[in-house]
Length: 148
Image (tube, rainbow, N blue to C red; front, side, top):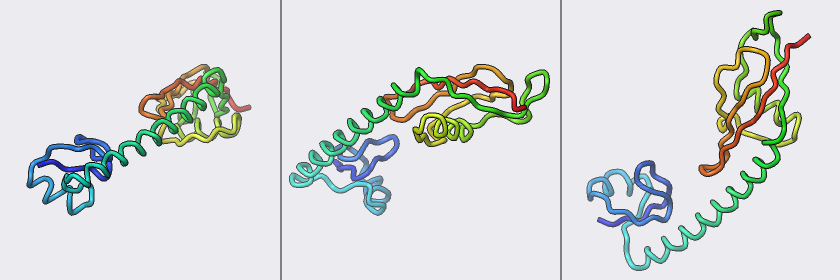
């Protein structure tokens, strides 16, 4: 059976896509949750409009993510943390710490959920990765210094 997705469904497609699904999957999951409607000639026209608006929003968000990336990539973000004389941190630097430091130093707001950072537990230079869009991922250079 053909169905038009009204929202993004993992493993199936994005909003406005026309997909072939089993009757039971459509009847028991997609339709009751409002994720899809049955494909008809009028609904197919509506799906084209959904895809056009999705593509426009996707283009705008990609452009915004690229602008943020071009601003942050050349910069080094400094984070101050308590550390031992040997340079080991008392704790570690988290994605929330990186997001706060970026906001404080560059006035660019990043969601901590979009930042990947591996266990930073020493002072020195480190790298975090920010993914603001499915097509835009960029490194954030961190300089961790010991608090005095």
